[in-house]
Amino acid sequence: MNKEYRRGKHSVTSLKSHLVFVTKYRKKIFDAQRLEVLIQSFFQLAKKMDFSILEVNGEGDHVHLLVEYPPKYSVSQLVNHLKGVSSRIYRKQFTDSPHTEHLWSPSYFACSVGGAPIEVLKEYIKNQNSP
Image (cartoon, rainbow, N blue to C red; front, side, top):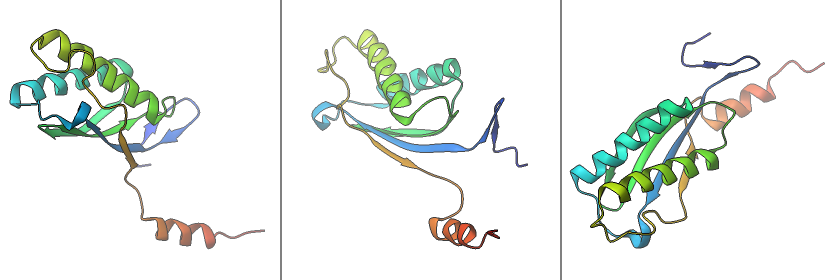
């Protein structure tokens, strides 16, 4: 088996998602220093929760993350932890931020990524040797 897979006690998985978080009211508040604080908070949490950040970057009003995670977490759990922890760390470090109560918009974008294209998977499943 390929080493891209996560091996658990009862499962072998490859769960990857592209996540996007935007600031409250899409305010452009991130500069290089502030973005780096967020990125470090994401990596600290990933280590603690045993998931991987494959790529991360952002602009003034949003961040993109590509994460690989174990099946014990749902995407919404990952998002809640990532946004919650990063927001607390950010507000603690940047007390001058206009986002003293809410850093992130309550919404997010998530998309599963990786593996074969849908049409290839559909064809593979359709061509199974049914009894």
